Image (cartoon, rainbow, N blue to C red; front, side, top):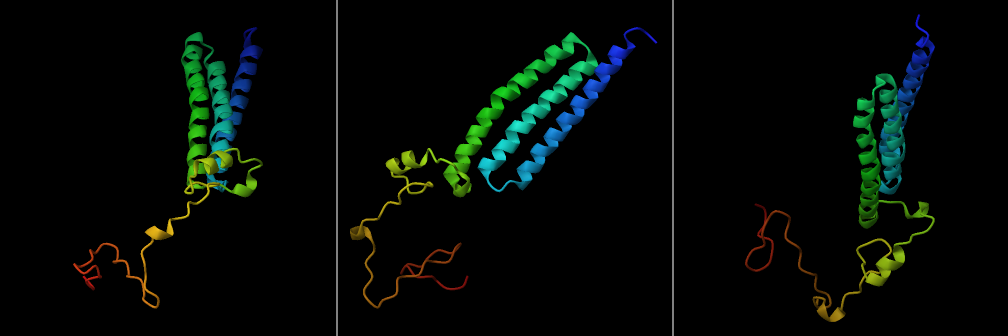
Length: 166
């Protein structure tokens, strides 16, 4: 047994612990993506534990390789992940908010609601729906039924009515 054997063994144990922790955090991120109800909740599971899990796995690889060249190859992996994950989470959050894929009851403050309402975007959550001009609405005689829309996939005949079964 060499004199530095206890140090090597301690580094191997530390690498193993970091690898297990990184795997556990990555598993927690995957479970969170499947279990959380809306996009704004899922983005936390997709970024926070996943990045920390990656850092632990990269540290475990660096400890087990014990090489400066390996460390120089692994540092950009972590740096690029730390740069791109917040941007991706921001874009997922914006898309989730714009499509209404979130539970408004879980928001503490909705900082975008005032901006959306002032923009008059009724198609977004928090926006005021625009009231259509009654003069532009199609007129229907009292007691008459409005014209039925043609069935999907079939064109209306020349009179504007459904031509019947195809």
